Every structure is written in structure tokens, then in C-alpha cells.
View (cartoon, rainbow, N blue to C red):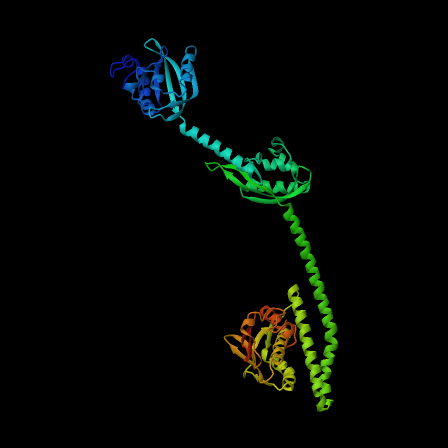
Length: 505
């Protein structure tokens, strides 16, 4: 490697001087071992008299082809005039520190460098010692960061929401144009903690506490509050923020957005008021149905009670009138019960009392009540009961109404044949199977048979009376008792309804 002041290896004055002094020897060692590119040039003409190996690797020019030539001759500086100006300044200054220049390497790559220059004397001649540090990567990273920030601000200003950034001490450092347009404030008025002045006084402490708690815990937050618009009107906004971190993992603050949700809040208030009104109407409806059912049930119960007495004392030719009174009364009573049950189910006020009961007693009583009506129509009633008790958990009154509904339907839709009621235990449950030889249900109507107010025949084609509530209400009541109901039917061949109740061992 060449030494300062000579163009031949092994024969420079700097090497001779290094032999004369330990300090000069140390300087020589540092010069050539330095990881930074270092050069020495004469102040008089700028010609290079020595460069280290790192300088050659960095610029692309080997020491042998560099020494004796000026950096301008090598085409090293993109702005050569600036380098020449620095050499001129060293004519009356001792040193220059941390000047940024752009160097052109031999491959014509632009390299950002920080240059420090020191005036020295070599063999009695004024020279300049130049040390370069490569900052190309750092400058590119800075440019990328600036471009990224520029893009962020452009995107943020185009966003249809208010965007903000805050540092680790909860001081806001940025707002987008949307915030400034919404509030009508300047950036200076909004930065720091000035944003709190735009929050409704009733909401301010809540928002500040929520924000401070989230900042302390470094967790995302979402808060709704009223924000003052430029015209003085307070509007509801949804403000969300998430923590952000620096590349080294340290907490840098928060970034967030605020969305105007005033119309949404207004809609929510309208819907809430409508819901409250609907609930009040539902309560009034339930109360009305309860009262009207009670008012009708009382005289109806009396009428039905006296029909059995009248039957005993009325001549045979008038028995059919007694049966008609009883049949119509029972149908009216079942309809009232179904309407009341539906209203209470819809209002959520129906109380179910599930206790262990003997299913046989309920079924036997229901069959006895409808047997005269069925026989008067010429139908056989078959009751098939097991030899032992069948205990299940259910509401006694509700199950009675359900069985009465199913039996009434069976009689209503059967013109000849029989009605069969069978009770059986199966797989820990109790099943009540009610079958008939009636008209059955068409395949296209089976999927809707448990829908409210649905009957197979409607309008002018309707062939049987009824509200269409019985099956729908029965299904919902059974589900409330943890039971179920299933249907098997075929048009013209009758129907089979199977009630399943959880058994009690």
C-alpha cells in the first residue's frame, strides 16, 4: 500500500517518517486499518497523495490509479464545486466537520456520504486529511420515511373520517383535514390537549378517563361522545384508537379515527322508542286478552257445566242441541286459551310450572271429556294405556289444553272411523300418540302446519272452522316444557301427532 507523498509502494516519505517515530507509526497503522474511507490530498492542487484500502473499495478506484489525480479528475463528486469550496475554506480553517456530499462511484452509483476534513502537514506541505462515512442507507431510509409520511398525510386527508395521532404522553401531534373541517379549528388550536375543548362538557371527563386508562394499559379503546361541530352543534362520534410502537418496540403513542354517528344514534333512539312503545302495546294486548278471556271463560264454564245436567233431563230428540252447545262452547274455550297463550308467549310473561305428574290421568280426563262429542258424530274413541304409571315433568294445565286441542282437531277433521289415543314409555321419555282416520294433510301443507294462523283450507274454500292457532301454540308450549311434537300424515288417510315429554324415573 502506498504512503502519503509518494506514488511507489515501499518508498514514501511518510513511511520513512513512520520509522522515525512511534506516534507516526501508529498514525500509519490507523490510517490503513480504518473501516472508513480516508484520503490525503495536497491543498495546493487537490491531487491525492495517499488513500487507504477502504477508500479504494468504496469509490471503486484502486489506490494505484487514484494517487496523483484529483477527485474531480476521477469524477467522484456529483457537485464538484462544493468539494472545491471546502478545500478553499481549509486555507483559513483548521477543520470542517460533517458536511454531506453525494459521491459518484466508479460504477456511477450515487452514494450519500458525510465528510470531515482536517488540515495537516506532510513533509512540510499543506495537505488535507478527508474521512468519509457512508450514509446512503440512512438517507434512503429517511427519504422512504418522509415519502411514507407524505403518503399517510395524503391518504388521511382524503379519508371520510377524522384521523388523529398522539404521542406517548397523550399529546395530539396530528389531525387530518376532516377533523379541521368538522371542528372549524386550526391545527394549532387542536394539537396537544386542545382537542378536549371540543368535547361536550357532560362527556369530557368520561372521555379523558377512558383515554388515560387505555394509554396507561397500552390497549385499544372505543368511546362514543358528543363533539362540537364548526357551527356549534354537538354531534355524536365514535372515537377509536390503537397503540403504535417504534421499530425497536418502544411505545410511541396512539393513532385513531373519529366517525360521525349522529344519524345512527338518532335512528337507535327512534328504534328504542318504537321498541318501548311496542312492548307497552304488547303488555296492553296481553292484559286485554287476559281480562276478556276471564270475562268470557266465566259464563262459558257455567254454560258447559250445565250442558251435562241438561243432557240428563232432555228428551232424545233434543240431545243433538245439547251436543251442539257443548261442542261450540268447547271450541270457543280452546280458541280463547290459544289466543291467551300466544299473547303471553309473545310478551314473555307465560309462566311454566314443570312438575312430575302422571300422564295417564291427564290423557284419561281429556278423552272422557270429548268422548260424547266424538260418539255423537259416530266416531269410535280408542284409549290405549300401559299397565303402569307414566311419570313425566310438565305443566298440568298446559298439557291438558294441548291434548284438548289435538283431540278437538282430530274430531273436527274426521267424518268416519275412529280417534285413537295411546300412551307409552320409550327411551326414558313418555309419548302420547293421537291418531285419526280423517282427511289428513297434503304434502305441500305439512311444512307449515305448525305456523300460526295457518290452515290447509282458506278463504272461500275453507271447509272447517278454527283460528289456526292451536298447533302453533301447542308446539311452542311443549318446547317450553322441554318436550316436542311431530306429525305423520297422508292426504285422505288421516294424521298421527306424537307428543314427547321428558320422563321421570
